[in-house]
Image (cartoon, rainbow, N blue to C red; front, top):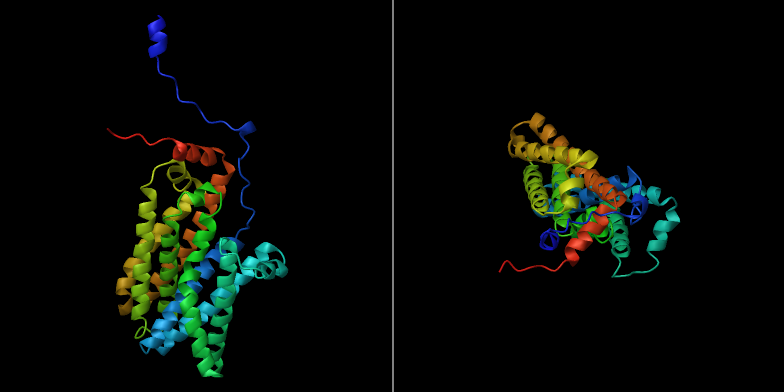
Length: 309
């Protein structure tokens, strides 16, 4: 009898928190302000790159579409952020110091100059005034653009929210791909088909990158990836986003033959990108509400890795 008691396996302990309360404070960022901020900023950054490359390859209509999208997107992104913060002075206070160790500080210093340069480039293009300064501003926006498309991914992943922190490797690629796809959608919808070839290729490439990053993300084990990104509202939204990205990317291959296909592809990719940003934002908020998603991954990371030998 004593031997049986010693040989009996100890059941795995169940996780509990005090009264089931969250371990961390859930993000207080509002909907739709922050999802719109995430979408518009990424689209604006990729559009600035599209405009710069269109200028270099002699596509003036596509370049103008990219510059206008970059200016409008970045300005709207700032407005969404300011509305979420509650007062404009809170955004201006972020620019009082520059902290390289703070993604929020670095992001503010990316967003502010990019918005100013994109606005100057678009204004010069529309009015014809100060063309040399306008082109220089557009080039400056294009140089900052890669950071503009991905800094929000770093901003989310650097938090304690498990739904965002657990995917810190894949999130920049998801955001970069969706941003490129959304800029390609803008180019397809706004530029004549004769100049929109690069935009169609951007749409396809961005969709492939986004879907590949999503797939890589889902290969990882753990309750956060296996539950919050596949179930509930976030799971449904992200499933719809992937379906729209796939449909929009495939349609972009043939969009040069038909205006109707162009519109359909552009709308699918725009909806996909917006849904991706909202789905990831919602998954993070959901993971912060349940203490299990905070504690269980920490225990798994802290547990010693046993060798298969």
